[in-house]
Amino acid sequence: MKDTIKIALLAIIAGTLIIQTIGQRSSGSGTMASSSVAATPSMAATPSLSSPDKKTFDPLTPPTATPVDNGPKTSIAFPVMQHSFGKIKQNSENEYTFKFTNTGKEPLVISDAKGSCGCTVPEYPKEPIAPGGSGDIKVVYKPGAQQGNQSKTVTVTANTEPAQTILNISAEVLVDPNAPKVEAGH
Image 1 (cartoon, rainbow, N blue to C red):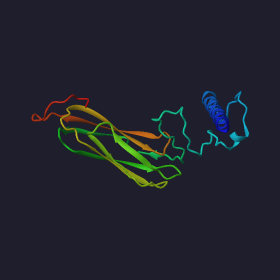
Image 2 (cartoon, helix red, strand yellow):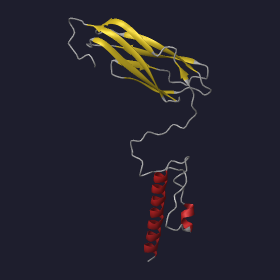
Image 3 (cartoon, rainbow, N blue to C red):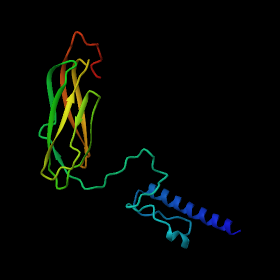
Image 4 (tube, rainbow, N blue to C red):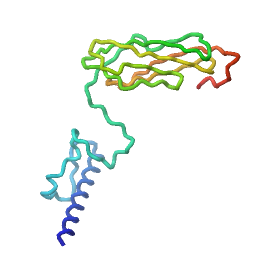
């Protein structure tokens, strides 16, 4: 009999938490929505689901959701955000370095830099850049068998607002008569 009462109380607590969580999602505010279920003294010991500093399981958040970066933000400035290699040969290796400055008041942390395809490979500093400090993002473009006008991007992700900065490179890849043909948009 005692086990049945314990199970019933746990079910009431779980139901109340679910109702509160759904109410939070639908109201969009940080306060708990009112519920028709009365709170019991045992619920007071239950941790709040709305506490922003605690990591709790939320069944309404999809597992693929990316975590929100609530850390300090800074700003980044690139004097040049696009570069044209001009006319280059197929199967060549072409390098350009984008210079940047941390123009904010917090350390700049670059968490990632990705090229729009495997032919565009960026290298970026892994250590924080102090306010007022500068750094480089080296981009190597290897067109392989691509031909014609090419335009690629490098997406830099950092603790900035917005979090992503897009750098552009372009080239006119001259046909190598010995290279296999590939679509221009690779």
